Image (cartoon, rainbow, N blue to C red; front, top):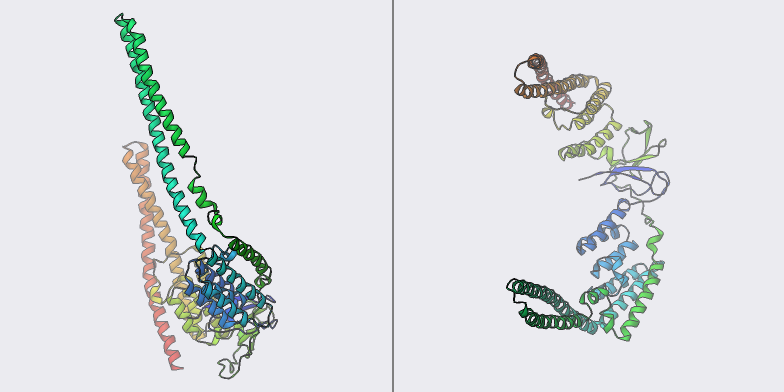
Length: 516
């Protein structure tokens, strides 16, 4: 499936229009050479980077391979292959040796070395040499920290267990505090009760003894609670596991001096690598070889093409497969006009891609302004119809759409061949019926809404002046509805014959084409 593309030359700003299946090798205005893939390079790189982050390495490799098929020395594509081979999810991942510990660094080193060989003789080779060295340091760091990883994992388990113990201890402390509070409250209540009882029975001599007994019990309970709280708080003085697990210092606590030195060298090498990154200097497409004119489908083209932008005549450049406008700075690929344009337009219509279909029909009119299929196709694209049978009296468009539809039909009437002009005159009458019907339908809906509102009001009004006015208004609405129904019936009677005439005239056109 060929898609329409329109790009601006990155060198001079000239506009290039062409099919996806036609390659452009040189801008006709400044001579800058391109390949179709060059226009999609940034898009392919973004798609590949997204695939890497999603760990879809094979998909990312396909994108990079596409770029390398166009330019084997594409720096960013070669670097992407290194990431793919190393199962490294992004370029940012190499900022720390810890991030790439579980990657396939052996394969990444080989890929970086191969990329350096491909770039031999260019300035980018230094980047891949440093990248190779960086990945080797990452591999060395991983080997030297294997034991530290095991020990740090044991430490993590220890602190996880401590965290669980901390949680349980805090829960016990909270429960104990609640229980002690309840017990002391009960003791205090009993003391008040005994005091009041002794006062009522006039036996206050028993109060001192009771107070002493309950006081001793309260002191014992309080002392037990304080001792328990001290033990729990002592236990909670251990380091929190969450701090150790998230601080990033657990592994470093177990690193050997040699591993620390490798990490330091890794960071230094990374800084040097970033300074030599040539991708920040921008991308220049490679020089392409000139196309051979042998078997060129456009070599014998002699037709005249008119620029749709300024109306000037386009000049063919058969060597490049382009039509160039010398007045407004637009270039069109020849495949837009002579490479099964009608078939591609119909395929776009089948996909409901009326925007592309409209463009392709417009390209056909640039070659032949009288082309019946192109004139009709542009009209159908406005109404989003595929065939005449799709036109229906129920079609209701916005006023702007009706205006565009009538403008297209007017253009067709002006430019169609004499034998086809009547077809488009009939279509203009049909469009007029569609517009009037849409306006009439709007009036009918308005009356129906007013009638529904009147019926609702009638329910709440029982007699009186307002009721009589409501009845009169309903009569007026019914009269309007009857008038609009008659208009609808008249439009329906006109619509059928007009549509039938279109079908017959279309058949006559097809017969004339077959006969010629």
